[in-house]
Length: 591
Image 1 (tube, rainbow, N blue to C red):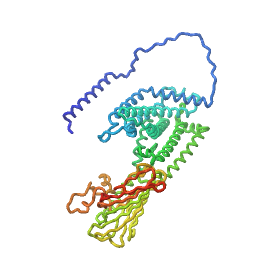
Image 2 (image 1 turned 45 degrees about the horizontal axis):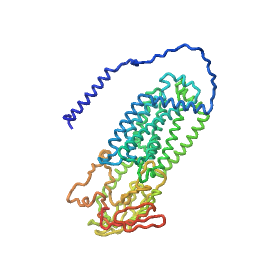
Image 3 (image 1 turned 135 degrees about the vertical axis):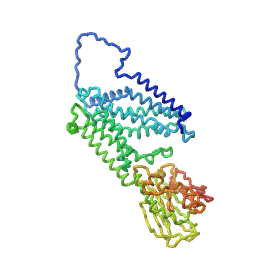
Image 4 (image 1 turned 30 degrees about the vertical axis):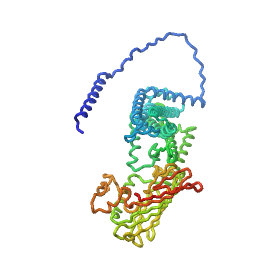
C-alpha cells in the first residue's frame, strides 16, 4: 500500500478530527474546579432542643451480618455511581451490541445461525477486556476509598470485624461483574431474537459465563484486592496487579511451566458441543475450579489478616497484628479452607501429574527435532505399501474408551528387498504390534518409533500381513485435554491413531525460526516436482505409506449410538447392550 488516494484522504480526515478534539480539550481545560450552576442553598433555622434517643448496644451474630450487608450495599452503590464505571460499561455495551449485530450470524464469510456458544465467544471477545479493566481499577478504588477520603481513622475505629471489609468488597465486586455479564446475556438473547434464532440455551449462558468465567474473574478480584492491601499506595498496587497478570499470562510459558495448578486462576481448555456438551472436560473443570476457589479464599484470609486499620503501617507492626488477629472463628475457618485446598491439590496433582502426564511445548519441539536428526536417513530406505485393511473397533463412549484391532496387508512395490520396517505409533494411545517373522531391533519409546528386522526379507512384489491393537483408556482427568476424539457422543477419529509405516515428514519441526535455532536445514513445503523423484511422486496428501486400499470395518458401540465408517453398510445388528455395524468399500480408496 502507498500513502495516496483514498488512504491518504482517510488519514488526513481523522488526523484533522483528532487535532480538533485536542484543541477543544485544551481550550476547555482548567486546573480550577468549576462551580456548579444552580447550586442549592440550605438555611438552618433554630429549633428547640430535642431529647436524644436511648441507644441499645447489641453485638450478636445478627449485628455482624447486618454490618456486612450494610458495607456490601455501600461499596456496591459507590461503584455503580462511579463515572469511570459508567463510561467503561457504556463503551463495553456499545462495542458488544455492535459486534453481535454485525457478526453474530457470520462465519468465515458465510451466513450461520447465531448459536449460543458462538454468541458467548463474541461476548467474551467484546466485553472481557473492559471487565478486566474494571476489576483492575475498582479493586484499588475500593481498598483505598476510606483513606483517600480521609475517613480511615473514623472507619477503622468502628466496632466491626476486619473480615467484613474484605468480604464485602469482594462480594460487591463479584455482584457487579455478574450484573454486567447478565446484561451481556440479555444483549445476546435480544440479538439472537432479532436474527430469528430462538434456541437460547440459557443453561449454556449460565454455565460458561456465570460459572467458568466468573471463577476466573473472582480469582482476579481477590488477587487485585490482596495486592492493594499489601501495597504502600494505590498506584503501586495498580502496577503490582498488572505486573502479576502479565507474569501469570506469559512468564510461566517462558519458564516451561504449563500446569494449571501454578497459573493462577487457570482452568483447562474445553470445547462445548451440542453433541456432548462439556462431558469430556467437566471433571477436570470442576476440580480445577474448586482448587482455585479454595486458593482464592485463602488469599482472602491473608488480605483480611494484613488489612490496614489505624496508622501503624510498618510491616513489623502489621505482622504482629496479623498474628493476633488469627484467632477464633477466623483461625478455624482458615484451617478448614487450608485442609480442603490441600486435599483438592493432592487429588488434582495425582490426576494431572501421575495418572496423566504431558509434555511442554519446548519438550515437544525438542523431540520433533530429535526425531528428524536421528531418523531422517530412514526416508531413503524403501518400505512396503499398505494395500488392504480390516478393522475391528469397539467403542465405549460412556467411558470415552476404545479398542481398535487392525489387520494390514503390505506389498513391496519397490525393486529392492526390504529387511526392516520403521513404525511410528500414536501418542496417548497404547499400541501393540505383531509383525510376523521379525524381531524388534530398536525401540525408541520417547519418540514412539520402533524398528523391526524381518528374518526373511520381503522381496519385490511380495506381500505380508501385520496386526496391531490400539487402545485408548480414560484415567482420571488431564491438565489439558490431549485427545478430544473419543467422547460420549459424536466420537470422530481416523487412521492417524494406528501405526504409521516409514519415516514421517509430518513429525518434523515446521517453524523456520525453531529449525534455525536447532541447526536444521530449511524445510520445503513439499518435494520439488522432479520427473526422476518417483518415491515422492508416489505419495499422496494423506499418506506416504499407502496406495489406494480396500477397507472393511466392523464397529461396535453402545446401543444408543450409530457408527459410520468408510464404504457401504453391509449389515447391522445388536448383541446384548452393544450395537454392531459392518462397512466395506466396493472399490479402492485413499487410506
